[in-house]
Length: 287
Ligand SMILES: Cc1cc2nc3c(=O)[nH]c(=O)nc-3n(C[C@H](O)[C@H](O)[C@H](O)COP(=O)(O)OP(=O)(O)OC[C@H]3O[C@@H](n4cnc5c(N)ncnc54)[C@H](O)[C@@H]3O)c2cc1C
Image (cartoon, rainbow, N blue to C red; front, side):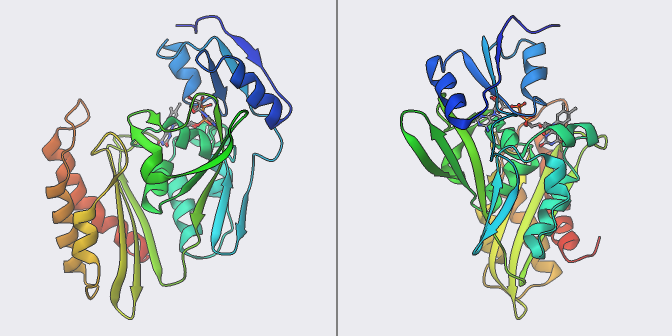
């Protein structure tokens, strides 16, 4: 199918883009990499009458560290996140997660911020943002800039707390110290597909004890799911492989996954049991 007719605008500055968006927010859509929006338009699942292409807006690309925070500008392509040279566990997690995002042509066009704004619960970047309590910086023409915590940003499937006249400009993540171990494990039917279930983990292991645990699961809920049950099992305990298995069991009991053509709820719970320990092991350099 072809998309329904639309106007195409290509602003040269953020102010211009925001002004265009503010003129008719209900009918307009921001176009970044187009890797989700264009297929949705072709299927007529989205029919904006105005596209605001932000690809010529300056200062929306790149990654920079300031103190203990990493700022990923919204239009940074998946491939550039994959090629990041940030040392330490955050850089590693971003490189590893990016390798699961679609195929090379999708990674060269699709953007980090586009994934976050699109809010597909299976998206690797949404998982990472939920895992690390990312902060989204958004801006509108009339209200200026505001920041939104990941826990408030992801609302439900394909729905965020971004207002229609707002543009996501950056996502900020904590730079994790060397005692953190991060990992991701995903099961997809074919390489490059969205994961049926994804487990993303970050453990701060200090002198053999899990000082802090963060566990995020994809494919088990309509938005990325932080497993409090698994985090509680892990936190404050001496790190052992058995402890991780117990955490995976707690997570599998806690989730209430959907059933669909890709797998029923019990199958997804089994994947949680298998993938959570695999994510932790992958962070430790084991498989
Ligand atoms: C075959 C295929 C396989 C894929 N596999 C995966 C996968 O395994 N994992 C994965 O995570 N993704 C996957 N994707 C999706 C891909 O990662 C997209 O790049 C991503 O979902 C959206 O980013 P984009 O830059 O292309 O956004 P677009 O498609 O341009 O936009 C997506 C949505 O976000 C909005 N938006 C974009 N940028 C902004 C902004 N800065 N501010 C406000 N709103 C904004 C748009 O208005 C639109 O509603 C796949 C896509 C395809 C086609």
